[in-house]
Amino acid sequence: MEQQKKPVQLALFDFDGTLIPGDSIALYLRFTRRKGLVNDKEYMIALRAAMLYGLGRKSAADSKTAAMRFRQRYKQDYLDRMDQEFVTTDLLPKVYGAGRKQLEEHRAEGKKLVLVTASTENYMRYVAQALGFDALLASQVAQDGTVTGNCKGEEKSRRVRAWLEENGLLPDWQGSFAYGDSKSDLPMLLLCGHPVQVNSKKSLQNAVPEMPRVKWR
Image (cartoon, rainbow, N blue to C red; front, side, top):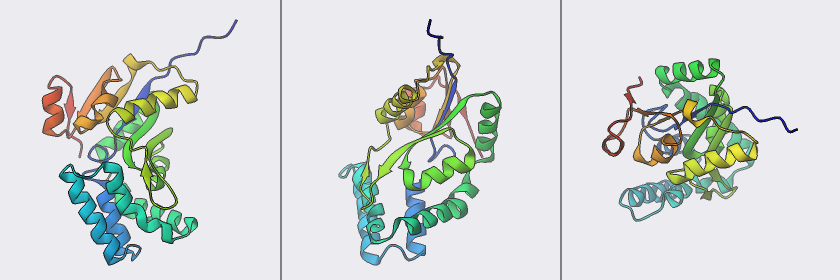
């Protein structure tokens, strides 16, 4: 007789706006500009793409691709070093102390820690490693900088379910936690019995006013 799988409890974390203030893609663009990786034309194209995204005239994936297109001009090992430096110098110092504490509490409880982010995997993998996540679900980046599989909105919940299936894990949703700051995190938040708004935007607060809120610093 096949042994029944023991359900696992999860702790799902968004990154931008949840574990750090602001947007990591914007920080990445400034970092690559500072390091001389992005030229003037590429920088202006990326800024324009971000503006058009804000106006609803360009997709999130296309906007991120504009910020990543410079990558096609460099070798992968060099890009890996730059991405790791970016995480060390620009991202990890911004991680909220309260967020780190919550991560450690869930780790001690034996939960599977999953970082679920629309930011790109090229640098987020170093964040996941540094913070001790069990898994990273992020937007993908091709060698030429094209961003696909934008891990946002319903895609977040789809990716979580797919990861569970791929790894043969049975989730204990009622005993699981999820943390996010924006309405686009709602599909992921609603998977879990313990969803928490972190430094939440008004759109999320208005959508689920009954959902618990915390302030991380």
